[in-house]
Image (cartoon, rainbow, N blue to C red; front, side, top):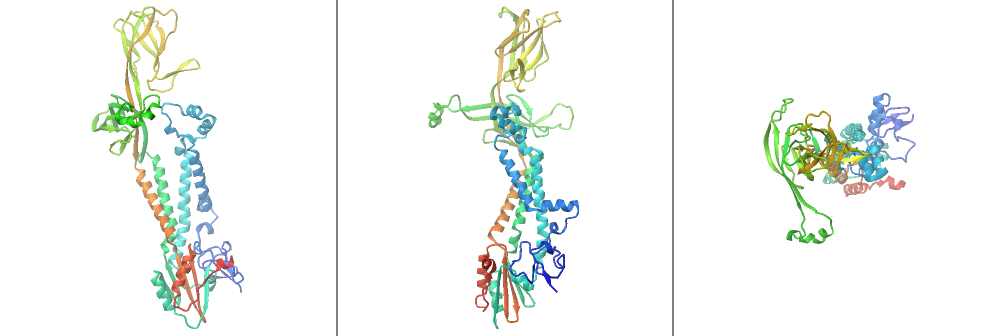
Length: 544
């Protein structure tokens, strides 16, 4: 009767489907029998039966087998890397100016390639649902592949037996036979222990092993990657990560974005310093400064006060603010408070704050029927003048441009304000309409009797601050450290095993390692010193 030997070394009767020892399907193994003396054992998982190789019936089994595949994991990583590379071709949406429409920005700046880039969603790649899905699938693949391999391998390595079948010995890559009346097995054991091998015995059979822990290096890598990916995914949870941008005008108190309405900032003042070629401190940059048109910023600073809202839970109530910190934010030194940091990121000089207008006769600018001042951040709907005149703001364009002959506003910030005013003379119900902006003063009708003129205006500087909170950095760092620890274990140590089997006329010796076969053979040669046992051969090299 023929016998079939599994990779684990167990001899099964002919016709056996599952190994009686490890439970692994024999037809899926590179199994060996008495007529196959050339193939070597695949010892990657020590013949252990993995779930993905034994179950393929239910829908859950198929999902498990899909994600446990190394090819699937590598493919997911490849797709993610390619997508990430494409996402760096043009700047992400968070890095383009805040006051522009992304749809037009990418087309204007990068042409048709930019438009395609935007329409495919690469402008906001790292926040897109499908990119997050890829990251999640990689994490799932790592977890399932690790579980599928770790527990069977752990059980096999934990219960290793020194006594192995003779075909198991013959099919090891390093194998040798010694025919001699006397061999010094005790000397062999002593030499192994000097090399820090752990020696196990069973009925005269020996197993010497060291550096088993190195087999867990890849799984430690997986743990590190999972923690790293978890940290990356948590960046989309506001409790762990905030990356917002706010504009705050001088003298203004504004809500700090991303703080859930808890914190406010008051911009006390904004200061911009530029390089001066006549300044002795900047003299070393004189040549470069002369080649540049306009002023070059040297540093900019925001002096601010941070407030905490005390009545946050009261809906509709005016915020009750309590000062918690006063400080300065510069380019490389953020203003930190609680778990947040404010980084100086941008600025806008001389933004319009208020504009004062007067009403006068159309043909005589020296006449006046009263003045009114418009707060450009919060303009009123109408203004009553002491002379009885009333002015209504029919339309307001904070930053106006002409689009196909019509005025539009490209942002909500008063950088180029324009108005449509309705002027009601005393006792009149029909207004005179005028369009008024920088460099534009147009009456809606030639019959208009009155005209509006700009008397004065006030400007102020605006600071742009990035609001940061990052509780994921520690998680990502821990994941990276664990990953590197696994890499070190897997690279600088290797699992080595040596078996010795007594025979009637001598001994057999076999060895296996997961890498660095030369070092294993050196260990064996040192252990054989003075034992009268012949050195084994590398059957792979002989076969080659």
